[in-house]
Image (cartoon, rainbow, N blue to C red; front, side, top):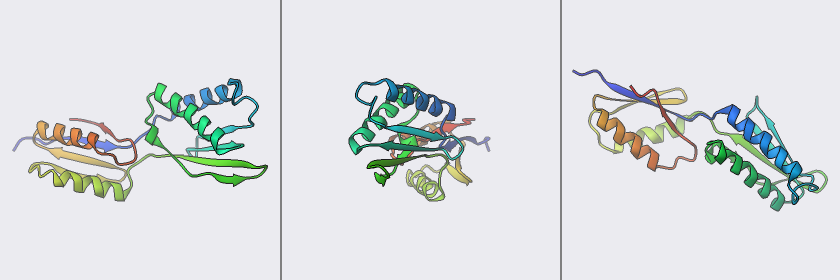
Length: 166
């Protein structure tokens, strides 16, 4: 029997790139003419991997999120990497949005991905759930390529990377 080839499916975010995008967004909020005096503020807690956005209105908050998304795109950070909660009322007639960085594959999502791969009916492909990642095995590299292309077409609500291809 030939040695099995494998790759890992993970969901990771480059924290330094997220921080760089955050810093650039803060500078733009301070300098941009339509946001300059708006009292909008964006904070990023690296430890908790959480954004907190305070703005005088939903419209201004959406503009700040758009600026942040533009910086993410420039730094090649997937926009699905941040999940924003709806507007909450804050003190001083402000609205608050919270954004959580999405990392790791939850048990439910891992089970769903595993089921989708099994539904492909590729005989030699096996999937193993290992904590917050999945390892996909097969004796055929072509089948592994087929699984990767299939997973890239799907939308699981968070970015997926395919690493350790051996």
